[in-house]
Amino acid sequence: MGDNPLGLDGRVVVVAGAGGGGIGTTVTRMVAAAGATVIAVSRNRDNLDQHIGPLIAQGLSVVPVVADVATDDGVAAAMTAATGVGGNLHGLVNVAGGAAPSTWMPATRVSRSDWRDLFTHNLETAFFMSQAMAAELTAQRRPGSIVSISSISGINTAPFHIAYGTAKAAVVAATRTMAVELALSNIRVNAVAPGITETPASRTYVDQDAERDRRAIAMGRRGRPEELAGVILFLLSDLSSYITGQTLLVDGGLDLKWTHLDADNISLFLKDESFKAALRSMG
Image (cartoon, rainbow, N blue to C red; front, top):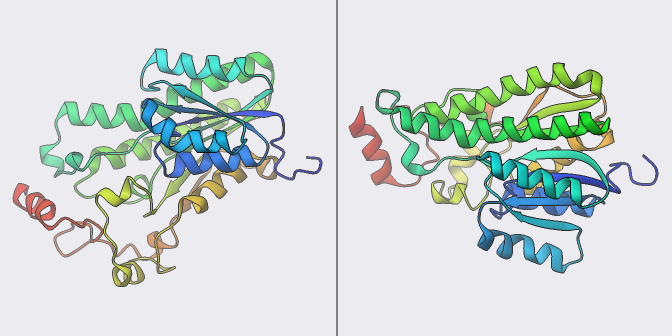
């Protein structure tokens, strides 16, 4: 590992979903600061300009790539950038995904289209990017590390969000199976399952309520993107060289209490009362 215990100097890491200003952007910054060259992938050029541009201006080794990794062309574009930038190909972080407020509904209301869209953006993106990275690492006979974002909703129940929760649970299953298949090639595959984390995306449906956070989360507060990114950085690095097939729950102890549901099983973290009323009316 030399002087850098993280062992990322001279290595190339792809971050799929880097431009949102939350976990992906923070991972990009911290991994680049640890010495890697980061291929920062987002389907939105404006997001890259806004959130990744300043990192480049600071002198960090970050290469922005506009690509939709939900498509074969997008995956190919990300990998072309990763193999053409110079340095030793090493890692992948699958952050792309999420779910719009419109995807919250009772299980009895979920359409095939809803289901497929959430699986495309939360499972297929991670799997096919991982597949492409694993194939290239194997072809180059290089070790590597792949880290995907699951969710506490994929570890526990996800009332009114069944498609998202099931897709994130599938990320855990895919992680375990790929870890076994790739272990003898010295390619590690792990996942991180965030709890409630303070990001631009979460602010669209989670309000500021310190008392609720103290009641629902063992550590009494929501996570920060840096706290998720730190765990991801560890899993990318040589410090975790004997860890594979694991999903690390990074939730401040929310799962230990799991008291975030109201009497009607609607999440206490949803801030919009009209939204919650609409969910109740669907039952």
